[in-house]
Length: 307
Image (spheres, rainbow, N blue to C red):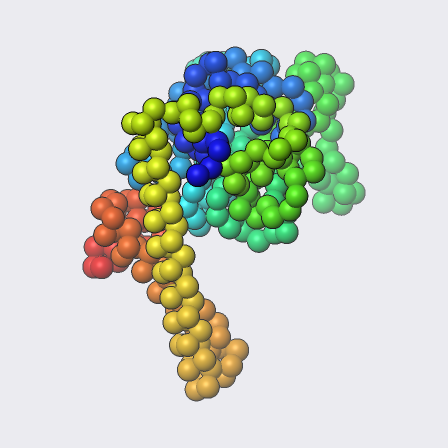
């Protein structure tokens, strides 16, 4: 039994309480490397849930003391178009939180903080930061703000006007936590807090997110949530492993007949197709809608209906 409540459950049930804002503020302060104070939590169309999302993802939208928007999203299950989803979420916030008729100078700064419990893309790090810069194609210089723009917008760089993205690939963290950010990643990964942690907010985790503070009813719901995550993850991992094995076998057979390189490529492609079909069949058995399965696998509605 873990000592502390998982972060995604805490976001859904506990951290929306103003008395617990210090936990979120600690994470954001550590990640953004500046003091963050949450003024209030906001609601938006991008902040809605459906039945599948109850254990697959959870998000929270906050406004800090500067009037900037911070979208924090936890994703438990693999989503092949997650990069586009990040873009959509941030872009939607930009348009939702500006009143009709206001000038573009009123566009709000957006931070998109994504805590993912799956392998997103390929990379060696476990924390990634994305921002927008304009680089000259001939001179290679970065386009800067004019002195008037810096004074008006109270920023030093063009990138500070645009949405910024943070991706925390917590499952990829497998080292001893030595920095405040690594202490946070360790908690997000394991549900435990390092013994001598000094990162902002983790002291509040120890105080406010203990399992023994939950009622029996809350504990039952919490453990059901954990079971759902484990079952879904195990099913998908199994289907992928089977799909890869089938793809390799078919690739070898095709390779012998038509050439190793071409066969390997076809085998991999067929393996991926088999994997997506198997995942879709599994999700369909769990009662998910065709639209939800399309979002998770990329298959067409007709292909899903034929399963």
